[in-house]
Image (tube, rainbow, N blue to C red):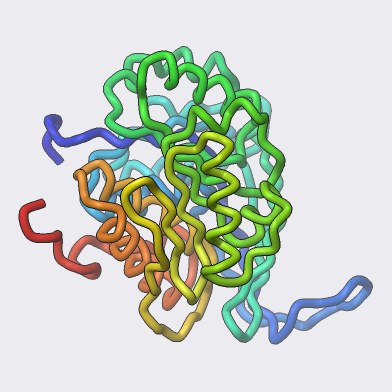
Length: 309
């Protein structure tokens, strides 16, 4: 990727996913006999970064891992994907982040994350990455790192007129002042409901929730609706962009692939409908494959670039 290409900088988590397959999710107190066990590179920040890189973007990641085997392997994987990892540091004491994932027969998942070194990604690390952040065309961040670091990054970006995409996952309340500084918010149904108090089940309820978020000051909102697609609410386009119909095998990281793909499209100036369609197609490919980062599609597997872009 040429150095003159737009730079997408993603600030976020790096994990190792420990995955077990099960016919059904256990209820409290139940032990299930599962199927295969697999280990995959993961973490929302790393997933989004790899997805964007595979789709042709020039990507740098700001994150933190431990000095353990998981951390070493994670760094090697990221570098193999062509990411700039100069600002993925190794914490001397904290373990690398780990996610424990179960996948049922329908391809749905439950996830428990032990953040480890991700929770040591602090404002000082943002300061150390300033030169990189200044170069960015677009910044992407999630909530698997400390909220104070996210707040610090968003405030820094506002002062420099940098566009920030926040994927508010895992769901948690946000400072009221943060909303007006966000270029784009990409919640799923659960996250949109937590942020707004509005149950989100379909395009109509997604529109209501998105309107609430825009009234708080967010410039653009895209609510992901799983197999239904994504509801886009911006000043220039509002509507449901449907997802391609596929047979889901593993929905892990579908949202991350969507956000990474959407960010790639936006760095190239595509309009909102085109960008969301591209992101829906990328996510649809991802859910037909096992794993997080490894499920992200390459550029040739998704729709062509729009004419004139």
